[in-house]
Image (cartoon, rainbow, N blue to C red; front, side):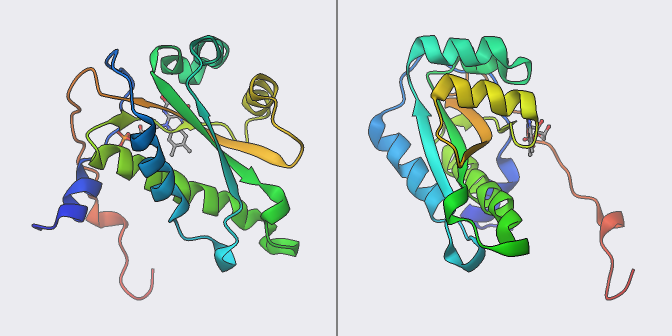
Length: 174
Ligand SMILES: Cc1cc2nc3c(=O)[nH]c(=O)nc-3n(C[C@H](O)[C@H](O)[C@H](O)COP(=O)(O)O)c2cc1C
């Protein structure tokens, strides 16, 4: 299909190696705006963001999170957090996770749209990763790290994956 947004979605891939090239504050702001444009339950927007540019901090996170080693060599990273004081009451509270995931995907697609690359590294609900990030970034109570996204200009071109599988699609009933 010849549609720019569809093409963008279909060609996004995780990027785990970055050029030694800075990402401007203006670019980071566009990415954050895209994240904040995501849908959220009752428009609660239960999220907050920590942009990390400090080299020692990036290295500390990369060294202490085996699943996110590439953070150590990224020019910048963002932690997308749940702001639990803005989460909905009752059973709907857990929607914050879906809201944070929607913001994360928007962020990743905007990264790709601007010619950068990124990888979603999982934090919530892995308690050890949550603890490491909370300590390193001095997150207050009620701010829950959801994922860590190192990003920058890709070191190598990405190989696009074809994930289309019609066998998992059902019509009307299972
Ligand atoms: C919830 C979640 C957690 C992930 N955690 C990690 C991670 O810790 N480290 C990593 O390198 N990639 C991580 N990824 C990226 C996936 O490995 C990647 O999206 C998947 O292999 C598909 O590849 P693609 O993004 O290139 O399409 C995670 C992705 C998701 C959605």
